[in-house]
Length: 71
Image (tube, rainbow, N blue to C red; front, top):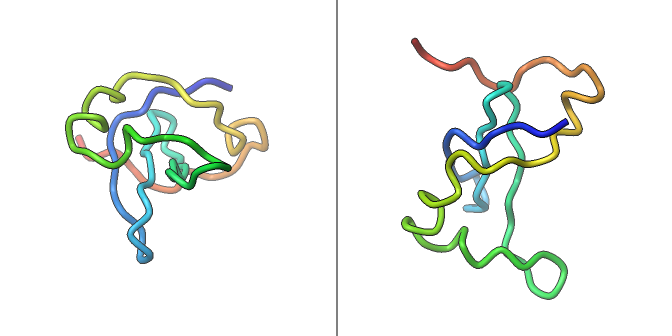
């Protein structure tokens, strides 16, 4: 299920994690040659990705939210 990226944070290993509109989160590692996401390495690159969508496997599995969006 496609979900929009609404923000980012880094995990304890300094890998970038996308926060999705559905309340789940997903790693967006740049680890060539396996994962090529150079846009994760700069603030402008991450900002440009806000609103883009990722496939959320957690939604497909019916998993609970990872985070709650503050109102």
